[in-house]
Length: 212
Image (cartoon, rainbow, N blue to C red):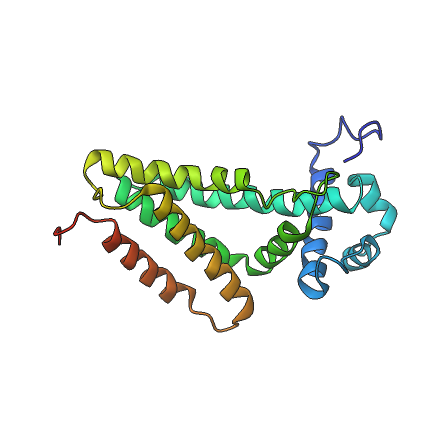
């Protein structure tokens, strides 16, 4: 959003936020249909049923809008996944809740996930570097997962035969892989996939020789 355009005192208003959400939703639709490169502000405005100038009033150009597409989905994900993990009892249940809630979120927001992936892979800053697809960003995403597994190893709920960082990378790859499949396969069985993944990870994190 541009500073100095009279919106600073209105950002929190319901009408302004609703309009921004409408524009972001239109951007998601357009990106999903024609891809990041062809998702022009004119096309997004047409999809939203507004003028291009309205988009410029709320966002400082395409890059700003694309950033908000990603940020909004991150916020939505945190609002669903965070409470699910926090409500779980113990590290094992927290880990399984993390996996299950992530996959549930993907299933419920497949189109937005597809748009986010396209933006993340293409959006770059003024320095030419990726805006979101960075090692630092990956570490931030994995940090809560690593923390859960370290806590489980410390408490004895998990075995110590696996490396928490490597396991976190494995789990994130499985979740991100599901996002790709959900966008490509119309009949992808996310519920079955989720049950399978949780069962596999449950076994993989147990102490060797522990069948409880």
